[in-house]
Length: 343
Image (tube, rainbow, N blue to C red; front, side, top):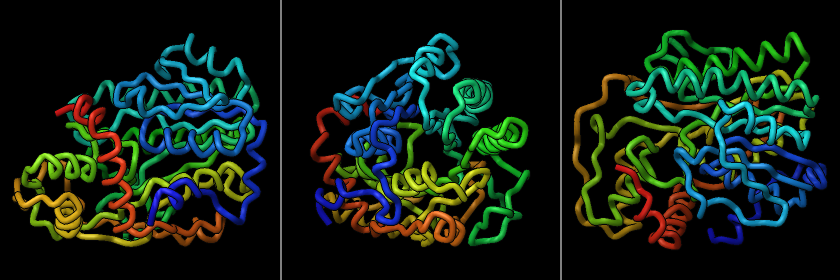
């Protein structure tokens, strides 16, 4: 697996030229998923890709540079910034901006509600006014399914027995998109992400485990596992997520649906940590620490049958290859990463 493969994303069964000459808004477009999506859309010769991001968890050096990319630094809670972004009358909106994620929401529940609740409401109101062709919302498969949901998680089996404000507001976002679809016929799709990882995510206190482990391992530190390491996650490489998002923008049968975007496989946390240590030649090993109060799901596994049926979605990057590509990105961007990592 090399960088040629990394740059060759895009689902073959869709005519991606449909994005050519279109105007597309990506909220949160400077983050991991957003920056990779924008990079792909720019390569497809979209007329303009507008990034709206307040940079609360992203960095300008990570924003794709292209003549058809416009960056607006601002919050989705700022009506003036939203008017500026929607002045271009985008035909597609990918709403990826979020207050991320579980621990951050436990520490800051009011901010989580404002960004993930009021924020999506504001973006939907503007999208309705310009009659968008598609509105794709980044929900959370790790959030909307609970302990009472059966694994592998299927889209119909959501839960209201949730354990963090982030899970609550991600479900709230789906309720708002469904409301705008049912009352105003806004063509929405809810994308339920599972444990996204890959190039573009800078490590930090409230970030995901893989970039944090990669950073600590490259600094020669032992990797702290919460629990006993047998916990599993459905880690999904960001390139496969981008494939799914592109398909959601084009497939008519996806409108009004909630669809899992995962790998459909589960890997133990302890095995992931060992691979990271091997890639980075880190001899500090692992250590076990106390599980966080809200971290109650020992296993996470998505059913991607619906995505396969509606989107012809098929994850193409193996977990091991994804980790290697992530390590390559860390090495290539190490100076910026060490400057901006927030712990």
